[in-house]
Picture 1 (cartoon, rainbow, N blue to C red):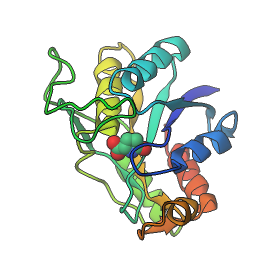
Picture 2 (spheres, rainbow, N blue to C red; picture 1 turned 120 degrees about the vertical axis):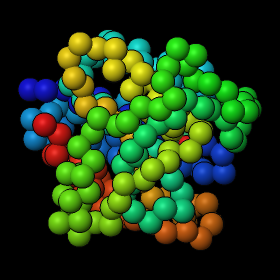
Picture 3 (cartoon, rainbow, N blue to C red; picture 1 turned 30 degrees about the vertical axis):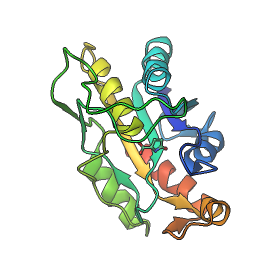
Length: 201
Ligand code: PCA
C-alpha cells in the first residue's frame, strides 16, 4: 500500500473554521485507490507551517503529498499549477507580517506541481464537480507550504507526486462567517478530494 500525506490548515484571518480541517479528519486512515491516507493539520504560521510539512515528509516518506487550503470566494476545486519563491500578504496566526521575501535563497523562482493536474480536473468534471487549474496560489501560507514541499521533494532521488489544491468555502463556514461567497457541502468537498486522490499513480 502506498502512502499519501494529506494536509489541511487550521482557521485563519476572518474565517472561524477551515473546511480543509474536516476533510482531513474525514479521510485520514482511509484507503483510497492504492493509497493509505495519513492526515495532518498545519498551523497558519510562516515559520511553523512549512517546517511541519517538511518534517512530516521526512518522517513519513510518503509516495504522494496533497496539501489542501481554503480559497474563500472560489467556486470550484482548483489544483494549483505553480508555487513561487515569494512570501508575504496578510498576517499569519502569530501576527507576523512579511513583505515579498524569498522563501528559499537557494531555490528556483518557481516549482510546478507534480500532481496529475489534468487527470484531476477531468475526473472531477466527469463526476459533476466544477474544477479548473489555478495558475496562482498567491503569496500567503498556501503558496509557502506548496513551495517548501516541492523544494524538498525535487531534491529526492525517487519521483514523488506533490502539490496543492485550493477548495471553496463550505456551507458551514458561510453560515458562521456571515459573509456571502460560493460554498459547497462537506459531503461534496470530501468526495471531490477523494476523487483527486483516486487519480494518483
Ligand atoms: N488558505 C490560506 C492559508 C490557509 C488556508 O487554508 C491560503 O490560501 O494561503
